[in-house]
Amino acid sequence: MSVPSNKNPLVIVISGPSGVGKDATIARMKHAGAKFHYVVTATTRAMRPGETDSVDYYFLSEKEFNNKINRDEFLEYARVYNNMYGVLKSEVRGALAKGEDVIIKVDVQGAATLKSKMPNAIFIFLEPPSIDDLAQRLKHRSADSEHSVNIRIDKAEDELKARGLFNCTIVNVKGDLDKTARDVNQYIDKLRGKQGPVVI
Image: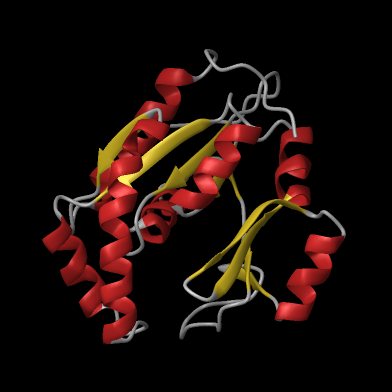
């Protein structure tokens, strides 16, 4: 089980194509009791059924998001599929100051930005068993239109080429989230004490 390290807290960036199961993997890690500070991402997209503001995301208007950009409050931000997403510096700095290991979930574009700013962070890439598998997941996710699904599949093919940016790649097999969450935890534990400090 992963535990906080007061001396040298870790920053772990979990990324991968849309629909690969980033949220589900992190939810399973939480359920299993993995002791991390899980960063809540800010977004301008509409809230989906079952989501809660400040728990799943910070749901902001375009104006609120732009105000935070102007105040330099984001560690990274980007427009993805016509919506803005960003990681707030305060979310990460506050946790590190308390000696807590931090989990950040971002898309592949965001991971590239964070890699340039935090080279000592741990970057984990979640990938599907195949593009066909990912397409089926996206099609069964009622939150996306057919047009949106096709755009995400096309982008995923390019995102899968970015594996080299990451410290490791973990295949998220549908129906086996326990294994995926366990693999993520085991990899983090393997690198504990070997990473330099993350400065933000």
